[in-house]
Image (tube, rainbow, N blue to C red; front, top):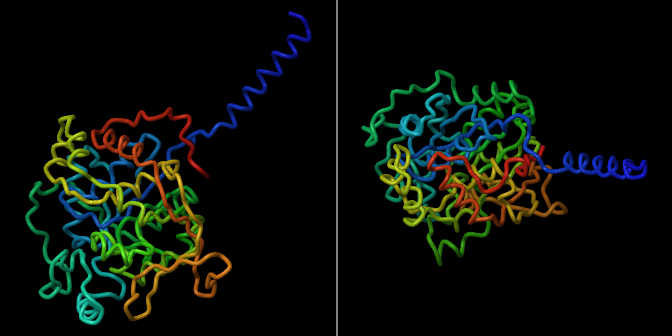
Length: 374
């Protein structure tokens, strides 16, 4: 071959090699994740949020931490442990956490409702019903319809587990928080370096401008329960020095778990799909989408950067999120920059969720094109 031709060929090969290195690639090691959630069960959004993490080969779940919220913490832990047994993931630690908010209480929420109106969803403190006869502390775990778990919870407490895990893997652990932020607030207060030593926080909550939606749509879907249930914890967590914070809030209201979607999942018959079909709940996929965005940020098609904090002052706005542009943000109060998700690739999310719920690996695009931002 002529020398000039050799030179041209070598130059072309070098360009291809450099281009290959420039392509977005998944990290050589899996994304490390801890999910903190109020795992109401059986079935439903809380438990189903585990699937985008468990079924993704590029994600390693280090543990699940449980917090009071949609249900009492002890019952949530039992439902989660039974779910993991059915799903074939009983090897992942389940760590029990806070059984009450930091400051808020059943008595305080009763008084708030009398002064400012009914909170549509009260979780452990009455669900969609009345808070009138709710006990101040959690009752014993009732009989589980899906059967009692053999898997035991860790003897460690959630806040300690979170701190230890983050420090064992500095700047590598993504925290997915889809319930009240009480466990994370305790970790922040116990160890001020906890948030800074994590990789990022992806959380479900901080709904913006939903007042009219509560009138014209479903009031429960417009209720920012995770923030309302423990506003002080939300403020502590969202003003902590995380390297990155992502809020998956309003956008998830429009992505529904429908009967048609569950029928697609149930088309494959195994213990997991039978469980999911039996306990089907027609709700927005709040927590599933949050976990999916954490695992694959390329699901996000539109977002906005803003400074965000949660109102902890007594009154009608207790637990409500507020956002500011950078120029107007109250820095002295600790407001931090947050990426607020505004739109996602819904079709791809749902198609992948069907595969994940059937315990199949997602095939929507080659793994080498799934980048994990550092």
